[in-house]
Image (cartoon, rainbow, N blue to C red):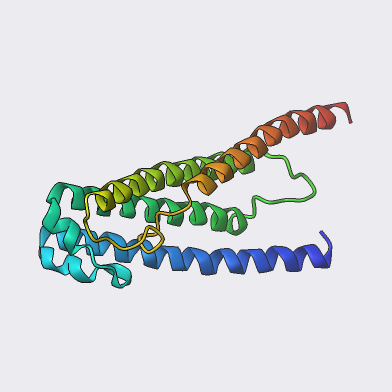
Length: 182
């Protein structure tokens, strides 16, 4: 591996760690606030994680409030899981440019793709819920403040990663055939 490749991988690894720590903090904040608002003090929903006010949703319908904060929790948890997998690829040193096609890396790519699809599904569900509530004149924060925007982007990312995973599977077969002929 060349020196510039080494610097590139180190830079991407550092960036992945920074994003991972950020999304873990966000996921922890959303999940903690959701549990506190649901089980301990519902008025806490008026100053939810990130300064958003979800008390109008709680007053409108408690079940819809629970659904909304559950969707928010799931999407942030899946984002943290996805970046955990990315960090784990670098930490476990599964990325080897001398033999780039290996089954473990293909497995990670599949898992990251499934996380992206999951984020897309739950973001879409949450966005549709917010749109439905807005149509019923419930005052809500914007979808991007709830961190459930861009479902189509997550679906596109998942699709792209699944294509790469299929290519990796084919690359593994070709690489193993090549190793057997040598």
